[in-house]
Image (cartoon, rainbow over all chains, first blue to last red):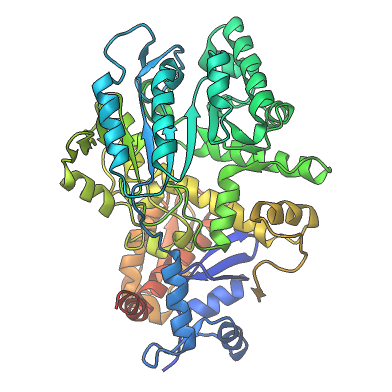
Length: 473
Length: 86
C-alpha cells in the first residue's frame, strides 16, 4: 500500500511554508496545503505532485520511491572518520585580557602553563600513531604564537608524517615579527584572528589601548599583504547589546579583502559567564542584530558590491539544499564528539571539543575524557556526550522541519542550563538555529534576482532564475 | 488582538482529538506566555493571555497539526528507520 512519506513543515514567510521529509527533501507550499495534509484531506493534485517528487512510497514492496527516501535519509547522516583534526593548546598564556575570554587564560609571564619538552614529545608520539593520511591542526591558546618554537616543531613533524597538512593558527595578532611571518608564509598555514567589527569595539573588548589596537590593525594588514586574504579569517565576537554598525563592519572587512564574515555572539563560556551573564538565556537581541546585518549585506551586494557571505548563513543554505556538508562540527548530525577531532590542552588533557575544555576550566562540569599518554580514560563521559549529540530522536526535533540539516549542542546546553535534556525550543541553541534556518529558507524561496544572485554564489552554483526548490499550492 | 481577558477557541478535528492532551502539554511549553486549556471531549483548545491571540492561535494550531502528523506517521517513520538500519 502506498503512503505519503512523513513530512514536517514551518512557515518561513507569509503564506510560504517549507515542507520536507526526514531527509530534508523539500518543497514550498501555502497554508491551504498544510491544512489538507494535516487533516488527511489531500486532493488528487496534491498526491500527483507528491508522487512526482518521490514523496509517496510503498514500504512493503520497497518501491523505488521508498528506496530513494532511504538513500536520501542515509546521506543526511554524517559519517564518522578516523581522527584527523586536532585542536592543540601549547600554552594557556596570553598577552591580552579580553573581556569575554572563553578559556580562563593566564598572564603571559606566568610559568607552568606551557607544554613541557616531554609533553611535546608525547604529542608527537600521539600524532605519529594516528591512522590518517591527512591532518588538520588548529593551534589555540592562550596565544599560541607565544610558543612559536612548539608550533614549528609540530608542523615540521606533521609535514614529514602526513601526506597533506593544514594548520590554523588562532592568534590575537598582538605580536607579529619576522619569525612569525616566515612561519605564516608556508602555504599550508592559515591565520584565524578576532576582529570585533569596529576599531573602537575591538579596543574596548580586546586590546584595551589605542597603541595595542593600532598594532593589531597594522599586524593584520601585514599578514594579509604577506600571505593573502584568502588564508586569513577574522572572526567578530558580538555583544548583542552593543553591536557594531553592520555597514561599518562590512567596510572594515572589505578594506582587508576579507569577504567571509563569521558572526558569533559572545559565548557563555569563561569570563563571559560573569561579565555577560544576562546573555545566558536571552537570544532576542542577537537575532534582531543578525537579521539586520544580513539585510544590510544583501542590500550592498545588490548594489553591485562584492559578494560578502556570512559563514553560518551560507552553511545553513548549503545544508538545507545539499547533503554531505558535514565538515563543520556545529552543523552535522550526529556530532561524533572526539571521533574525528579532539582537543589537547596545555597540560596534555584531552577534551571532546574546545567548548568542553572551556566549561571544564570554568569549573562547571568536568568534561575531560583522557590524557595524551593514556588516551581516552573516561569512555562513559564520552559515551554520554555522544548519545546526546544526535537530534533524530529528540521529541522536539522530531517535529522540526529543519532537523535533518541541524545538529545538537549538549555542551552549550550544559553551559547555560546545567543539563541537556530541557525542551529544545527553550534553548538558546535551538532558537538561534531555528531562526537561522528559517532565514535561509526564506532567502531560498525568494524570486528576487538580487537575492538569488547571492544565494547561488553561496551555494557555488551558476546564477539561475529557476526555482531552487519546487512550489506546490 | 491583545487583550488579556479575551479567549480564542481552536476547534480540534475529530481525528486529532485522541492526541489533544499531548498537543496541549507541548503547546503549553512552546508558548509559556499563554494560558491554554482543553474543552471537555477534547473538542477545542482555548487560548487566553496577553498576546496577539489570533497569531498565537495559528501557531498553536500548527503545533496540534505537528503532534497529530507525528502520531499518524509514526509507524511509517519506524519502517523507514528499520529499513535504514537493516
